[in-house]
Length: 251
Ligand code: PGA
Figure 1 (cartoon, protein in one colour):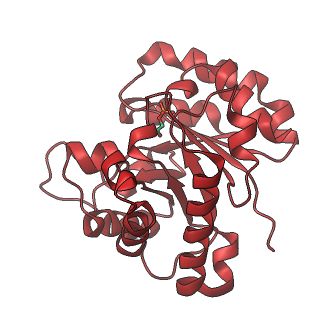
Figure 2: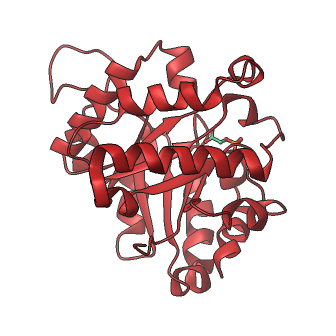
């Protein structure tokens, strides 16, 4: 099996003002041991902070990404941000299809796929999010729902260099609830199998993150499961100490 480098990514969502640069500073200061252990670190701040934090993070173990992009490179799309603009601001990656965007902005799999193609055009790593609702899990449809999202949201030709998948059960995000180890193992194995069907051996290089209420005290249990290659962390990524304690699951 291809060795996949662990990735711990922090999604700051709509949190962070210019004073948050100090938190990134603390992360950079304390990232050494985790980075030396081979863990890749990314922070996804709000768009207003990307240029500033990317400039500060350049040459450090932390890279900066955006939380969404538009599918078009430019044009009459008030309030939107093109993938090219994220790259121009210093972003290396972009989160796409987060459940909050799927819900709040009605993003469909087709929309997410178009954005993922745009991100690739701009040279950004795509972190594509998938995950079932509680009702879908209760109905025994979790794997089928995620399979459909993967199929619809991930563009052709993806590789381990330009695509990361984040499995985030909607009901686990910000709730303190996490799936059982058996449920995560089942889902990640299913995702890996689907990616193999589509991308052959390259699928073994695509990292599959788990996201949803990852905290320092559950990180080791969740992140060392087979086929879990890292975490997408929301709330606990806002504090340097918590974020790095999660990444320390791999040290
Ligand atoms: P959470 O968010 O860690 O606060 O549950 C995860 C996410 O939405 O990526």
